[in-house]
Length: 230
Image (cartoon, rainbow, N blue to C red):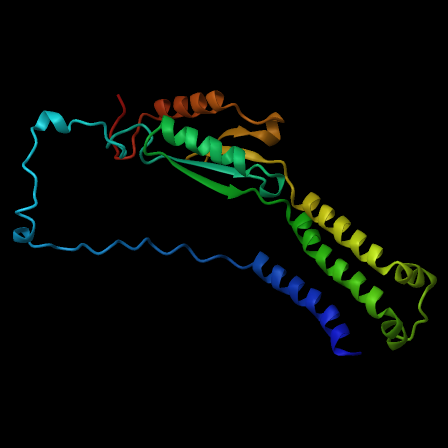
């Protein structure tokens, strides 16, 4: 077996083992954000360029920062959606709408994973693809090494090797997308389910989702700083 055949056979096995290891390995928590160091400037360096103080009534502009005690502060909305189904654009649109409707609310986007059997099968697809590539490219040496005579279907595949490899690549990718797809778009507020596309069979409307979350926030009656909402 030459070096190219060893690579064709060993690479998919390595990728499969690496994916299985990552599947059962817990990810470490994200590091805390680093605060930028404060730079202390001497007051005498800026006394000459400092503009005169303006009257207090001219500084009453609406603030863009979350107001303490606002309805959205301290609450978290989680949107779990199917990333392989191209639902990210809808999730980003809903995020901007909720952040504008409820200042201070935190919106977390995450992938809704498929069931464990489908995830394992999706990891096997690349292994099968590379296995077919290896048989098409080096089957004449591989079959005698295991004591087999090349079967007739091998010569049929080898006669149109480029068509076989292209079809294997396209069909394998389509199968992998099908196995990874869930069709999910699940919205929860503080770990309480608000809307489920898997149950409803449709996407939520922007106004529908905004009003549903607003009702839950008002009914909870507690803001992020622990104060009662009145």
